[in-house]
Image 1 (tube, rainbow, N blue to C red):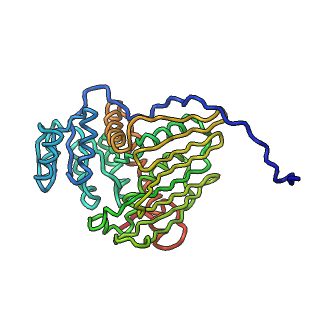
Image 2 (cartoon, one colour):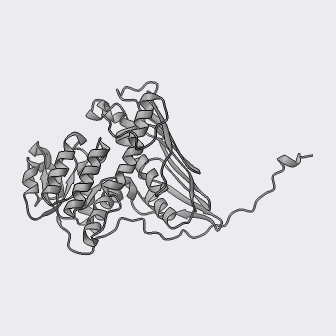
Image 3 (cartoon, one colour):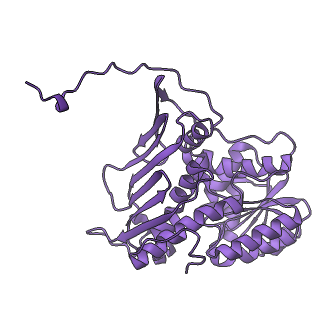
Length: 367
């Protein structure tokens, strides 16, 4: 006879229901858009320009210290754009209203300040800054000048994460009680590149996407503490550790982030968001291809989403900035909001170094 405490009654299969329609796609500006200048033509710039061209955004200038890089991108994406080697020449152009600054952080902060003082709205590459107080001063300067300062946290418009944050905002799963990320992929391509010189490559340059979207999912709730660690994978050839993990504690909620960049076969990317009224599950072989399922008391909704992370993400960050300029409001991906994500990331790095839990916001600077 089955013990009473072990008895399992068969539950009825949940109903299959229609997926709620939510505005997860990047927004679209309605009025004529200001011309855009791209400063920094490294490897990521092609993704920016490909997305901007697909969305019809007007790019009028490309700038890079090595003119051949800018010229190659101009010829490929925007043949009528003018090429510069000095970013200050881009800032001097009266027809340029927005600059996308896609350089490395060590030179980017000064460029952002110069752009704001020149009266330009700015989209900064991520990570925004390595000093939270400097970042706050740049935000203050933008406010004083009446300008928008946004960050290219493009994961916010990855289709699966964008739908999830819209579902949370709409109250479809109630209060978030847990978010669990697990990413297994091959990041060994960074071997021998400048990225491999970043001590906390996975937590910082890559993991910032997960710290950022976690902050979005949790809304105004503040994290209490975070503990994190990094380690080298057996057989890895990169200088920087390719494995990292972090646990974040909130009142009544938790977040876990597991990042393994040493997986050569069978990559897998999952996001699990549990709430008081429902759950969102995202799963796929990589960042761009995700299956999304919404579980609520009404039943199970299987979603077929349009687009992919890189195209939607890079369109989304610039489109949101352009819409914010048009509507005279703060962009959703504002630099000030992104400082909360950086505070979480910086605390994780400090915890990984010390082995102790850290309070987000207490670590003001890294590097």
